[in-house]
Length: 67
Image (tube, rainbow, N blue to C red; front, side, top):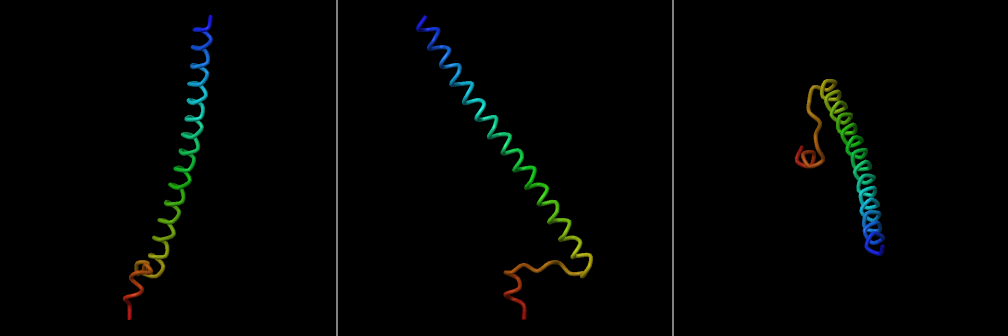
């Protein structure tokens, strides 16, 4: 009887750990999706400005070396 109870408790602990892991994975997937969407939007904005002005966007570091 005690052995069965112990086995049950272990199973419950494992199930709880598994649920936590699944929740974390879901949260992670959502964050990745958001990051991907953000990167796509930035790329689109970048190419748009490129098309408008005919020269690539200049980073802050490059701007330091411009006359």
